[in-house]
Image (cartoon, rainbow over all chains, first blue to last red; front, side, top):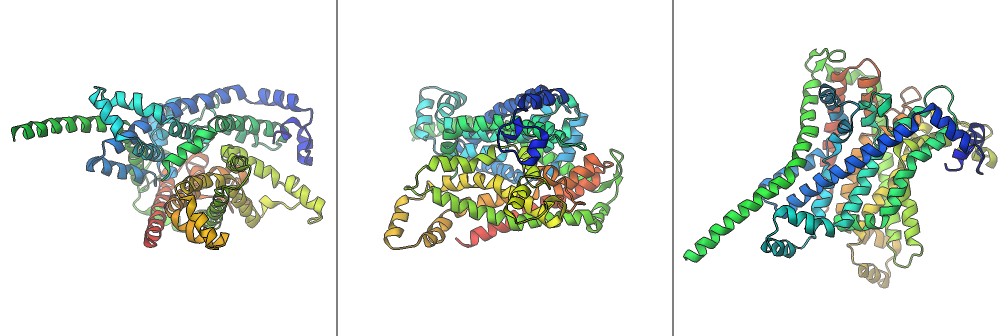
Length: 242
Length: 301
């Protein structure tokens, strides 16, 4: 893939295995024909905001469900797990109608709202809160910290690897999400990287060199995130799936 | 006596306070799920009994559901989803399980390298990998070039123009992309199995295959159940691969249900009612399959 990005279209289809000299040409073609910097900026904006908000909301909920659990909250948790079964296809059309009425098409809020609160993340954080010692919470309560202070000062710093795992998964999902942005991003200004790459293949002639460069640019961010967080990712998942 | 009473009273207020704090913790997430999942679900149900173009809808009863039974494209999509499900999910989960138990071996060298290499496909974007598979299997693509050079084929075979080979390419692509993802869950589950059990089995002379089926599989059952449900769910909702790898073609032979729903709602003349009826069928299928899997998973306990 990386090699193909440096070749001309003709060489790519011939199966060139060595780096060619067309990288700059491909890059110029790509920047001229497509709004690549805009799509890149959009993708980063949507994915980062979604990851931050989602981690905050879901970790609060996961912690709440585990630490303060009682019958009422367990029932709510059961209902939330049911939401895991709801296929996105079933909610997509009403969501589109709701969002277009609310004027949320082509906005960041429109992109992030449906996937802020996910049963998967809530479950991940609930499992990790299970391993959080109750003695620490009791001690902190006696020291006069309120429940939110306990969460932010005690739970948040100790569960760093769970947060890293959740961050990796959420960022990747947000970055790679294709169906939902395809539905609500009707404006060319608001498109994301996966949409841009898919657009490159439309039309009669596909320039494979340019396409591969687009694919490469679309893949690099998630791979970098994965490599940075890899170690804590493995730890976080290990701690959570039991 | 009175001391006990005050203690009790104090406890009640304290637990009440904590109870309120607990609800405060989970309210935002619960409200978001209600608004973004359950309300749309309910509206989709209403919508599925209406018919019309765009937003001009009128009540039609079960008309949409009757129409589904006669829609050949829909039946093809349903078949495709099940073909992918029945062939791809078992192969992928077994492969992930075998790889995970191999990587769990303490004597294996370069473990980190293998683990990263197998998980790396998950970091690639769905659209990107679909496009790469498409160009690899194109008539003049990488796979054909190699097959011709090896003398297997004389001229390039158009994998994506024949229904069965196109489905095969989708299945291969899915296995490549998702095996590592499932493997991570199994690896995490394996961390909780005492390694000494394996060593004991080895001393008792159990073969690798026997330990795999007698120790690894039974002990990982909850994780296997989780991944099976997630994969079933994911396969029934397959969209990106169908759009970008084959674009549903040739002639809708590889289209998936989600892809068809998208086409009906946003590509052709919008028919939200009919699409909603179809989406409800997916919902019911997912729920029924998950229920069956849970029952099967429980029975072996």
